[in-house]
Length: 240
Image (cartoon, rainbow, N blue to C red; front, side, top):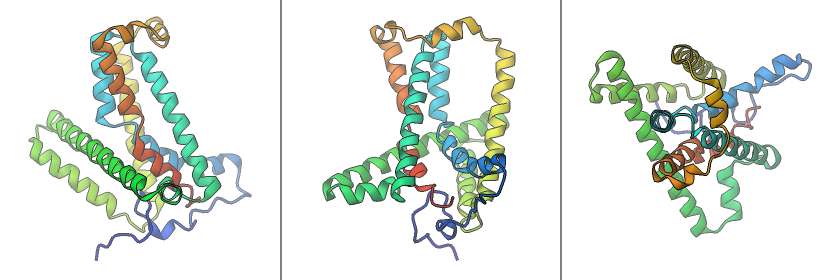
């Protein structure tokens, strides 16, 4: 019978939280690196959501390469925050949620909890609608059918509870690899101007002066920096 886990962990694998994913010290450097790529794969999914695609595509279609500097800045900020959350888990052996509960008062913790729930709901709405729209464009399914299929995918992931991180990581690896291959193919068809791309990575004050660019820049920053990923990454050090 399906039951919720007693120990909080994002991939819903409570049986592995105490460190069943072994990383032998006698293994080669390459194998040890591979043992730690799983958490990175799971965290990377949070940066491949429809919100990112939507804001980036709109920015490119309207302003060309001029907002690439915002994407670069947002990505760097996201990586810094992810490293800090990972270090929190490694040093304190606690995830971000437990650390907040210990160091903040009741009012602050409740506010953080509400904001985290709102962020999760907002991201899930974008994920579900984005998947439903993708199925509609690819196969002609109605939005309702696409939402049902997406919800069924979520149930499948929850069904992996207790079956090991490796199975979940293998699925995520396949999905990320598919996205990467599609992205490379699209780049080949698009024939971008690499000189323009290089110029786009340089900050331009025009972004702040034009309301349209500023609005999209804020959207890119909000779609890139994922709060729930910080909670996830800080808790995923336990199985290693």
